[in-house]
Image (cartoon, rainbow, N blue to C red; front, side, top):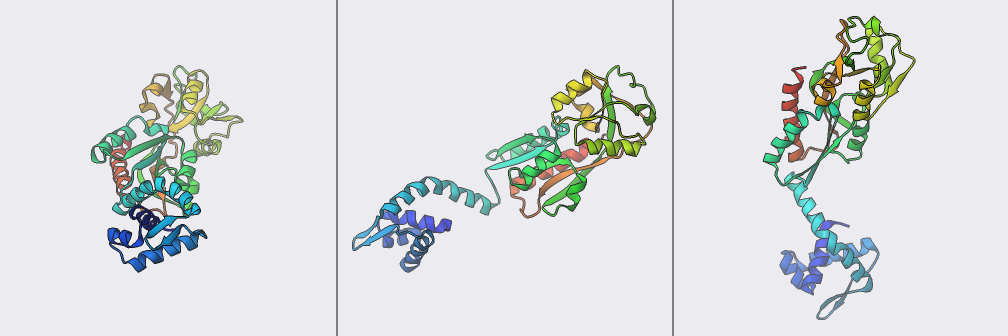
Length: 295
């Protein structure tokens, strides 16, 4: 069943005859008759009863008409928007570390260019937002590149900047003035991503994997745990740019350098970017490079 067939069906009902509908649509009467026949064949039901004076709806045709009349306008609008390279809504996923500066600035500039396009903003960690990208719930995700994504043909990745990582703890932590990674061995850690990512970062520092790494996917819970305990955490550098974090947490400035992450935009490889999505991507890239190069 094609949208054009529904259009033809509704036009015939509105005009009362195939000939009148053909004139309104600017198509030939035989072509319109063929379209209606294909629609009925596809549905396996007779929708129209032809009479010498025009057409009337069958019982099945009446039920079909009630259903499609309400949805046709929205479907036609969606098709038109796609044909123009526009869409009514853009859905963006992003990590909490980008919520303070990059995303708000991009959204405000996007609003100026596309005042009629609705924005849906979904904050979450990369391993929760990327699946939403794959199933088309999101149009784009701003997040660090995960190792597994490099081998995922379904996701296109465009790098923006290289992002440093740091070790943080509550203000006044016993190790607040530690200058060597070796001093951090044996402590309890909190992971804002999956524990294996924190363990990998610690191995890069030469720190044995701790017995306990607590995974936490809630940013507010992570802050509360860090501020109220002696846990340590590896976080992305912009973490301390967030006012709520800077009040309670500080960097432990060890001499060793943690491996960094590449931050960028994830999109579906099989879906071309519409004009609004491409515009938002450019804004996020430009603002992101400026903001993240400072870290």
